[in-house]
Length: 439
Image (cartoon, rainbow, N blue to C red; front, side):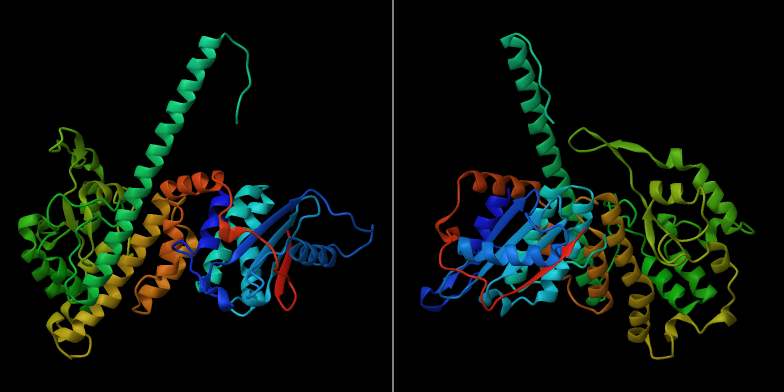
């Protein structure tokens, strides 16, 4: 897989890019990886200095990089010495600083400490390729059996293992596809919020689509929550009454939110109704229910939550406190936060209701699919949302690089051997940079 990744970097295959390389025109960057058990150094020698010197010498001996632009990188790992160093050529140093190389090393330390050396090499090469392509890496967050048997039995085992491997790969591809579709939905929601046309179409907890549109009172409830008006809350609940929003003022005279929450939680088994889909398969009915704060959830998820909570999973507003608010607590919802009209009120709704919901959805995506969406990805995307930017495409590409189908392509590309662009000869470390570390 690493060989395939190195080939793609050398060829400038997306998401990697080529760069001008003298008279040779556009060329991809060259990356080499050297793994060794232990360096031969004096007993009291400085291991870090020895690793740096050896990495530079190996960079020169192998000639990593095009001689016209010196666009080579060499990653050296000495396992027993617990030392790692990245040597860069002059052309790489012009676009990638030594501090950025240090960030790559920081990112792979967790894998090195857990002796997952293959994962560390793959991640380092991936991030180096993205760095030379003008993208910034994430900041750190974060067998076979032998046996004897007759030939027929052996064939049966091989067939079973092959079938299981195919099943596992197919399952992983489908799982990544579901994760990618949910990330696309979050990006669409971000665009809808910007255009003030957002309406929840899926549950923020399970990220599954609702079986019907969210109640019409959702926006009104959000406006009421943003202004803090109890009378507006009641109006919002009345507007949403046909869809039976959760814990609305129509729950019954004198009923408290805590009592309603307990009732909703105890009825979770009945709320998890199962229906037949068009394909004939069973699926959970996901009816949208709206809290007074304006956040909508599917019936099964919010019922389960309310078994042990009496607040909103997103904004943490206590439902009983919201019910006890009086109109004197805040200006009417129609006035906005400072009497500036509906547009100012929409801005408040964005900041207090919808944008926190987007951040919550991203964190849930990490919880549901941790192998594809990492904590550093979520942190960076939350900053984008708070700043009003689109989700960083460089990080989106790092997410897409985790696609099992793409990793399978890299394995095939690696088995085909090095591309003509990846042949070394003429490159050197002179005038370049580098960074080293230990673990």
